[in-house]
Image (cartoon, rainbow, N blue to C red; front, side):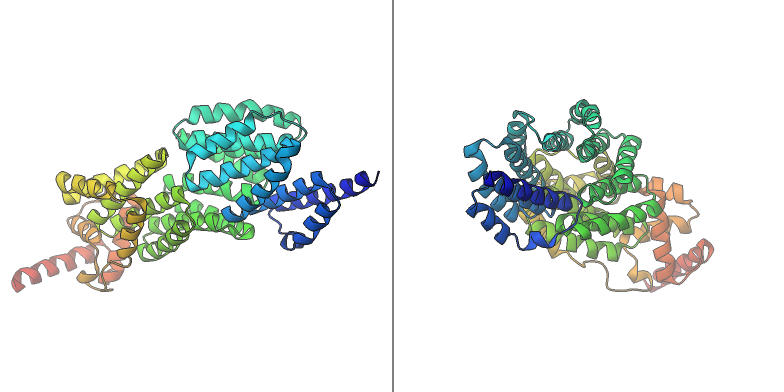
Length: 449
């Protein structure tokens, strides 16, 4: 009888703490967990001890702390496996699968996920839906969006019937990711918006929803909407105390800044994010950071450098078995078209090959060596980047922004940003003044020659 008296309150305690961690709250009890764990161990409350360790493992995972996650999982499995406590074993496998996904170890994701799915659902059905989520995410990043969608859809109705609110939310996240991988931007936006509307306080789900919403807004070149989502993304990541989420939010911020022509600030933000992601071994996100940095360097007119970074990121993604999202493929293709126009096909292909030969570590080192490589001048013709010079040249000849974009393989917003920067650097207010200044500069250059 004494066992039941001890077990029931202790399990309720840890279930409560577990829900708090899911909601992004960091209970004081979680910071000093050694005493309650020791107490549970002394009283032989094995089931409650497993629940406590499961909560600690999930809490660590929500912060993307792989070391703490693996430590808690290892201890939990040593207790749960001998007694066949499958509910908590499933949570262990889910945590290991998610940690492996963020590290780019896709084989481990599949191994842990398939083992968890093979288990009986047991009493804790929420854990089953979370495993379905991570497996659907694996499908999405490996180029199988239809399988990803079907996997999540099959479980969605049952989770709703069981009123498994957070389980339903996890599946909604999977469906948003599947839609994004299938290039269904409207579907991705709808699922992610619904997810955030229903669970805005669950930081783990909130930042994932905002990540997808930001991606959609950026692909549509809607900088105003992207800024709104980035701010929410950053806030949710900060509340979760998750460095990976913060770095990913900053990559989205960098792309938003670049869309508005703030390449210097964007470059700084990307480098900071890249350093964090590389130091923690989050390889898929490192690859994403290299791609964003390529966009920044391309914007600055450093075509060869940009193409090498694109080659390195493409090669690294292929090595891990990842498939780029359609939104990423479109950005890469636009970048390569712009680079070919500036460099020529042969030089562009050579730079791609050079980049592809780099390991991920070498690519990061290469990216970090070129930090701050733009021109030192801040005013006058010498301060213009090569890309800005191309835009100024065509604008001074009377070409419209769409025509300039078509000639240089740039979006209208990019052309507009380049012109805005050029106006500031050259001290002119409009195209007429720009054309006059360009003519004067051209005559001066000829006279000087």
